[in-house]
Image (cartoon, rainbow, N blue to C red; front, side, top):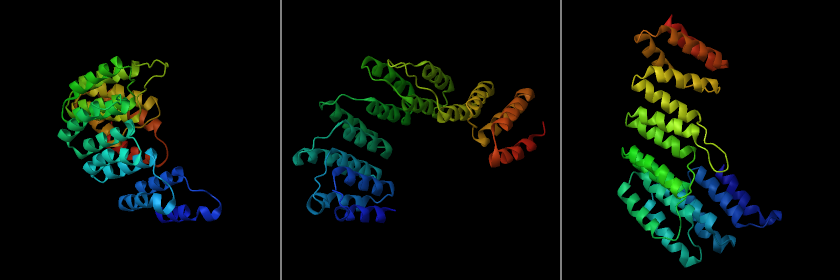
Length: 285
């Protein structure tokens, strides 16, 4: 309800609440989430004169995300140059936001050019920067090159996170290189940060692997991933599991197919369970 959010923001002084940049950011974020980019820009432009709030770094970061989300990456990039003129120095989040904007736009020449500009600044890249680089390489079919960035991160004492590993797994799956995807998966499971906190696979990790293994007809590995996923109380997409079972049956692995069906039936409840029973009945194993 962006209209309600705006009216509440306007009414704050009359309710004894002082408007601050935090409240401005809350309004800008609400407008962004509702896709009201033009209105967000209008509120941002009026903030200082009408609302008595000089936008700070947090507000600029919301505006940068809004511009990038509406495919106005060049305008976002120009905004970075304008910010120091009003006394607001861009931070690493600003640069990562624009970098991600080029990535989502699919402008990889612009991405590389901006990355070079980024490297000339005083900022040190963080995990967000590296995740953008990994994603850009994977999107261009260069997942092996992207994987090398994990070692670069390590040498720079930057810890990869779940996004880092999931992006690589997705990249290798897209290239049909499931051996490398599985190696990244094992590396992910064994990874420990200095604070002894691991980077455990999530539902997306398992579904990406399972879909890729079924596509490559690597059903034996697919069964293991499916079982591991179900053991964590996550039910993989029905169509993917159906493809796995079909593949097992065609490969004369009927017992393995029955085992997957049984495990799925035990792991799904409610309406989803009823839907799975209909799929299960179609196999007649």
